[in-house]
Image 1 (cartoon, protein in one colour):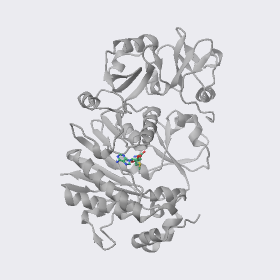
Image 2 (cartoon, rainbow over the protein chains, first blue to last red; image 1 turned 180 degrees about the vertical axis):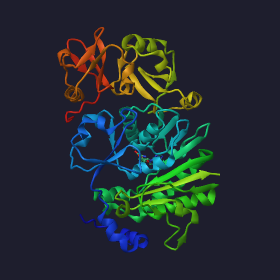
Image 3 (tube, rainbow over the protein chains, first blue to last red; image 1 turned 30 degrees about the vertical axis):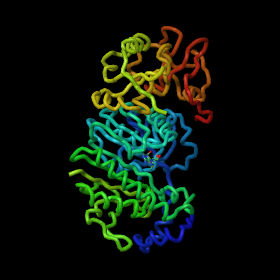
Image 4 (cartoon, helix red, strand yellow; image 1 turned 90 degrees about the vertical axis):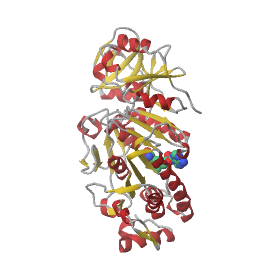
Length: 303
Length: 155
Ligand SMILES: C[S@@+](CC[C@H](N)C(=O)[O-])C[C@H]1O[C@@H](n2cnc3c(N)ncnc32)[C@H](O)[C@@H]1O
């Protein structure tokens, strides 16, 4: 498969991937499907009849996730999927939840939550205890979010449908997940569809929103609380630059991320701009190094 | 469109869950019961004070819907499947996988087809597969799946 990148995007990627850029492009489509078993409903993948004759391997860096290595079609129509025993999942998109490290007693805000894959995973780790407020601006996507939660047996969650910038509570959160709306480069690259619609103008527009959202998320966080910021895009303007903006304006610190994967460090400079040195603690997921979809994750603590 | 969720008297709901399906009161004690229009929802009780603060505002959804119609105790299949199957002592049928697939397609089935059953009376019955609740059906002359979204491609 060859993906034709818009010239400007190719140049952008080349500037931080160097000679690996072709290797990167050739690895963007992951050659397997991945699933997460829903431990709110089942304990072991062996309980799922439709996997009995399939080959799968356990993912070492995420709990309860598997790569399905058999060539399967229609997994989404399997009875066990429809019953919420497992969820089809991109593995890299589960990393922000692992980094958030939810605990049973936490009160967590998922600022842009639809369609709810990460919210479900958070609830699962919390064993349906504590409380999650899952928000999304889009009413139709919020309905999908409610369906996902219902299917997965999640009952420790309140769903709100607001512009996250207008969220207002009379309490603060232990943890905030901002899986930010982004230019979705990773998604387009994986599907090999739509990447021609990419433009730097969209990237810059998203970056403005992301900066406002991260500031808002941080305001809603308790002192010593943790905010995890993630996107499925690799443009530094939507990632390191957003974090750098927060670091300049708030008492935030970037924390190390512990994950058993060949991740790359966040950038500390790009396009003649210098970012805070602690940004090297953020992680970039490159397909050619991890066999996963593109992702950026950063863990921040409120001082 | 936003809805207001309210805490209301839940004795009737709890009594129904206990008397119709055999739930223990201790198990039900982990939930807060909420109401919106005709529906009943359960949400984890842990953060009761915070939940009360949030519900003062308009929210889109709270917890999981377990009854779509509280007057006639019409269960919500998907919502019921969040409950632990061990809690169901009566008014249940046990399905094999083929019947589960038919259930998801919305196909009615008969009592002769089920693997096991304990039915006290007609009305809504819990469907169990492999020690998990998969939903509910209405038992009259036959058993009709009580699901809002059927999937004809289920396999
Ligand atoms: C990357 S998706 C979230 C995916 C989700 N976290 C999951 O794992 O299933 C970004 C979401 O941000 C929402 N969004 C965009 N602008 C928003 C805003 N101002 N406030 C809240 N949500 C917003 C979009 O509707 C979209 O659902």
